Every structure is written in structure tokens, then in C-alpha cells.
Length: 572
Image (cartoon, rainbow, N blue to C red; front, side, top):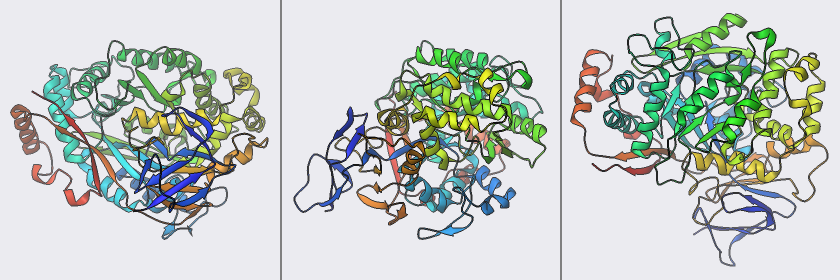
């Protein structure tokens, strides 16, 4: 039996309501417990901040499109300076890459920041084995993956015919086949339209050849999700991402959640999670009039308690955009004329990859930076607002400490704004310069731990320091009673933990990797009566349309690394 006691730290745990009290945290056999014996190893956290291990609700770190990005951008691994580092070895294995890091750097870099769980937010079902191979290769982190459903032929046909039970049976089958955690939707209907050179710009555009609209897809998948009672809600990347004026479409999309109530045993209250909301909060009728719509969008989110969001903050870096929103990536390629990769995954989804530079001296990029921060600063319930960069689309996840600094310090926001050549345009087109709100450590714990874990239905395991939770803990060199006046020290502290603990094992000490304990793949196992009609449909489609046999489609059990199932039972 292993025991550990963290003493004298300032503890921030929104799940249990601890707001910076000096509280001891006891660990036994990888779990948080009420007390330990006198033989327990002790960590003195005096003058330090203690939180649960970080939970990233939305990131793209594993799978085929990430690897496409690595292959098309060999220059990414050569970046140097300011977190980039070129090729180095600070753990057991070599690390490389900046916006699209290697699997080893991914695990090590998250752990150094105090994160212990990530959710891969777009898994093409046909290529799920690739995702799981990269999970196996990524050290330290527990991980989950979300299969994409919003352009899946089975779902389009079932939802067109209002066959929610059949759609639910198919979703349950696909979650098992891919070891996925929940329902992801990317540009519903639009990515399928892109196979025909078209798009669905708003939620009422018909999907070619399927006689269904994005609005019907979203509502049908919400009904499917609640029929099954899945741990997480529908996880939505909506239509019309990245275009001026889209904030009105976003509000119209969010209204689709009206009237639905969450039905699950996992404690989540939302029925819809709108991801990387920054990209959906734009005013203007073109790039010349581009402006922030963050206030209007957040006014709606604040009064609608069955919605959660994550930010998708722009970090003002060179990065690599990648998404299953194929038409958007082509649009981005037409704007910057850089490299472009496009992939279609049969009957299921597609993707695009395009490098991009968020130049602080370009007004549009500066306004995007402002919008991501405004969304958080306008939020009334930070348990429903999660910090992300939509890694790597708006910037690399290694910039989370910088986002935290900006949110905690108006001084740091103004310092960044002062470096922008188009400062006056950015001030005119956004509210950021007039916002003096500064978030505290309890707010950050809500946005990076408790909130994401609760939204994912995982708060009994992750994001909490309650007894019974996994002992995933981050200890930061921050005295909660006297935060530094220099905001750069806030970024430094969140960049390099004093300790990161994974299931009771110290994996980082003073920013250095010290251990690589076992990790888990989290997935949702749905038990429900067999649906013979759906199984006939699956066999027929695989015979007629897929290039692989049904027998070779599902992820083999031996490909899944330490699976840990979230059990759901649906009765007849």
C-alpha cells in the first residue's frame, strides 16, 4: 500500500467548495482518502497552491489528422525558443514539435502544466485504431476520444426519418466499436456537403442528397444522447465557423438546446457543449468590419443553464489548423495560400489541415485574441466555461499558462495589447480594453478542472479532490495569499508545477519528469437490447459502401490501452 500526505497547501477544489483553505490532502493506493497512517510520505506544500489535475475538455493531440499535420510540417519540430525547444530530451524519451508535438512531448508537456486527462475531440470511426495507437504511445495522461457523428450516413438517414431509437442503437454500437466516450458533431451536414463541393453555412441549409438540415441533425443527436443517458452531452462544432457575422448563427444554434433536459446518472446538467466558441462569436459583414460578438453570445449562454462552452483562445502564435470541417480549411487555404491537406473518410467525416500565423500586428488576429478572453470575462458561471485553444487551431495547448495569466491580470492584457500595431482598431472593435475583471485561482480551478470534468460526466474520478476520486493533483509555486504583482510569474508557475501527481505517483517535480505510471483509456460502454434492424443496416452498408469488411472495422481489444469503461444501461 502506498500513502502520501500533502500538507499546508492552499487548496482550490470547486467540487467540494474549498476556496483556498489550508487543507491537507491524503492519498492511499492512488485515491483521495480522508486520512492516512503516520507512515505516509509527506509533501510540504506551504506557500503553494494545490488543485486537482487539469482536465482538457477539447484538444486534438492524437489520430490521423494530427499525424497528417506532422508529416506536412516537418518545420514544426525545428522551432526554437519560447516553449519550442527544437528536439530535446527532458523525460525518458525524446520530445519534438510545437503546434503538433510528438506523442511523448504531448504527455510530458501536459504533465508539466499539471494536467492529467485530455479528451481527443474528433475521432474518425474508420481510423479509430490510429487514435488508440497514439494513446498507447502518449505517456502519463489518461485519455478519451469522441467519434464524429454529424456527417455520418447512418445518422443522417435515421434522423431524417425521426428514428431516434435506431440512431441510439447505432451510436451505442459505434461507441463500442471505437472505444469512444461520446457524440462529437463537426459542421453538421456541411462536411458531407463538402464531398460535393458544397457547404451548409447555416442550420437551415439542406444537406445534399439527404433531405435533412443541420438543425435537424443537432436536435436529433441531442435526443439520441439523452435517450442513451451518456456521460457527456453532444459536443458541437457548429456551422459557419470563422466567418464575420456568424455570432447570430451561433445564438440561433444554441437555441436548439431549448426545452431539453439532461437525463443521465453522471451529474452533468448540460445537453449541448459548444466548443471553441471564439471562432463562432464574430460580428461584421466582412473582414474590414470584423468585430467582437462575445457579449451578445455570452448574454445568451449566461441565461441558458443547459449549455456549456470552451473558449478556443487565440494565442498569437504560428500554428497548424486542423479540423473535420473540411470546407473551412479550404476557405482558410484560399485566404493564406499555404499548405493544404484534405481528407475524406468514407461515409463518416472528412478533415483539412492548413498552417496559419496569428500575427499580433494584423487587426483580425488581435480581435480574435480579444474575443477569446472576453468570453471568459463576460461569463457569470465559470463552471460552464472551460479554457481551451482548440489545440492546435487557435494555438498550442502549451499556452494555457499564458491564457490563465491574461485572465488573471488586466495589466498583462493591456501589456499585450500595447504591443499590437493595430491597437486602436482592436480597441474600437472589441471590449477588451475596458474590461478590468481579473479572475482568481478558484475561477481557474473551475475552468480547468472541476467544470470540464463535470461537463464530461467524470467529476467522481477527475477534476476533484473529494475522497474517492483518483489522486491526480497539481501543486503550483503560487502563494494564494499574496499573488505576484508581476503577471509573468503567474504564467511561469502554471507552466512548471512544483509537483504533478498521477494516481498517487509523483510524475513531475520542479518541472522535471520523474515517472511514467500506468494510464487509462476512458470510454462509454452502453448496454441495451439488440436492435436487429440496425444490425441489418450496418451489414448492408458495409457490404455495399465501405472498403473494409465489417469484421475488420471495430478496434481490436488488444489495441486499446488499459480501457476503463463508463457503464450505461438502457432498458427496453
